[in-house]
Length: 457
Ligand code: NAP
Image (cartoon, rainbow, N blue to C red; front, side, top):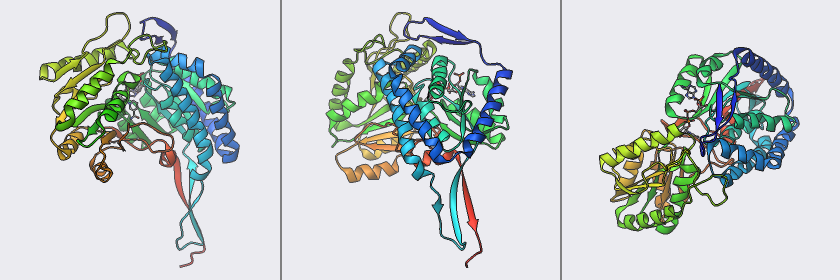
């Protein structure tokens, strides 16, 4: 049984029977047939479907955003933004795919030699609940346009989002089977990966689950892209515009109720500006309005599940015991919803729980350092390597530090964010492979060399 519940109220919204083996078999067989027909179409025949998906998302934006907010608790305004971004992603790939998939001519000893981008086949997408539309759609657009089909196993707490996504593709007129949703638990994933019709897997979620998926896929010799957890550093150097940094820092930490892989989690601040940064950060955090995610005034909704809130609270309590200085928050908010107080720690040390572990909720850790060198050392002293931000007015220094930071993306004087145009992904325990942009699109193609003779040299 898969249950849809509202984390802001605790109320059960709907229950669904998990799909059984017969349904899974039928879905894979249909997807396989659909993919073969789809791959035989030319790119220009596939492109209009992408634009239809974008239009369908925009047409249903309000109702889709409400499903997101109901199932995972983010403020409605953020859910509307998420649906809008998905539509942009489909438009972006409709426009860019002809260039990205164009043959790459590489002069060699042949009469003609080139790289062509062929589809891989059926791609399994195992996805998380935190951006229940965006995570799926950022993978789906490039996967589909390059001639693949996608089978989605979404997180078990967002079944209505999963089904709504399938409906979007239906309404957009995409051939049946090219995008299918399986309502199944995590235990079904290994068999899906091993199924001979599945060519590759894209996974977004926690590092422990990523390890298991990687190991099953490795055994089956199937390509994987892994987008895993993060504990992004947000470095503020002494010459930074501290007020601007603090404003962006609060958004970077508390957006999506802190439940973002690329949320800034460790604020590493040079001691000479640390007091100013902490004062500004706390003042702006106090302005957050925590409450009913459906209300337009709300800027921080509920967390997605009570057990996730419990995990965050345990990390907060451990950090208090370890000596981190709690400046605000630190407690669950009473009631049946999974709300948590916006929480800020100062004087955090790298070995404390809030700095060492990924905190997936509204809790910020501020670490004070004596110089840029120490900031980079501490930023890299983490198992994760997803995103990072550096704030400095010395742009040359910013670029130099960007090279020294172990991360898949470094944003100078800004907040790490995904963008359809730019590759996105991690290093270290944050995973491997890339999504988005041209490089993300090529992940799920067969990059094939085609050589034509006679040899000229
Ligand atoms: P999760 O527990 O790993 O779940 C993600 C998905 O994997 C769900 O569909 C889940 O299914 C499935 N799953 C869980 N354990 C599995 C296993 N052992 N084998 C196969 N599938 C498994 O992660 P989450 O709590 O939903 O999401 C939060 C995590 O995702 C955080 O660590 C966050 O940083 C990371 N994340 C990373 C990115 C990125 O782009 N790097 C983006 C967003 C989130 P069930 O729901 O049925 O258990």
